[in-house]
Length: 190
Ligand code: AP5
Image 1 (cartoon, rainbow, N blue to C red):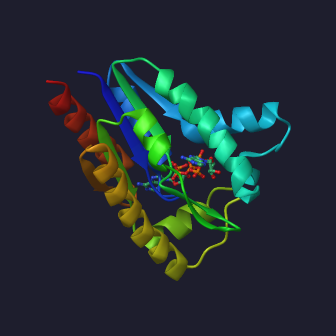
Image 2 (image 1 turned 30 degrees about the vertical axis):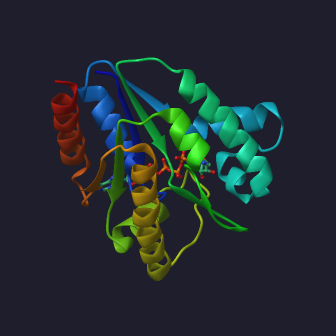
């Protein structure tokens, strides 16, 4: 069976760390970072120099990048494609869906995985990462983002018929989360 897993989570929750652990422990798994595909397109159009600038662009421009990235993903072949992306983007125009109808349908996911952590853990992880221009957000703001993420996840699951799994990435336990996802993939591939 071909697996197409969409992994999502608010920025800084640790989804990239978790998905990298899955890729290194699951033979045949291929990691695709949706934000990197969008950034490649944005750079070639000379729209931005840094990936963190993308979410500040007018939403209409971001939609163009999103469609370009989704077209590339839809054409990808492989035994297990793990797609690292977002359920929504915090833009100056409001929360904008990362997986609108046409995008999520084009990707044909078999599974949807939401990585969560406590707002306090996420805030600490964001602040500890000097390599990124993270948005400043309060613990209350993060709590709101986590609630919104669950709503968007439910919609994506309903639109695609893919099961949704919510995994908690506790402090210092990213490897355990990766292992639990590898077990899920092994079960699904049977
Ligand atoms: P993207 O590249 O996905 O960046 P991001 O959202 O900032 O996510 P990160 O990968 O940086 O954070 P993460 O949650 O994966 O955390 P990490 O593993 O690094 O997206 C870039 C941009 O692309 C977006 O802003 C948006 O503009 C655009 N985009 C993407 N998808 C889109 C879509 N569908 N539609 C429209 N636009 C889209 O971990 C963070 C830190 O925590 C690390 O230091 C790590 O070591 C640490 N850590 C992780 N887990 C643990 C743990 N268990 N215990 C202790 N520390 C931990």
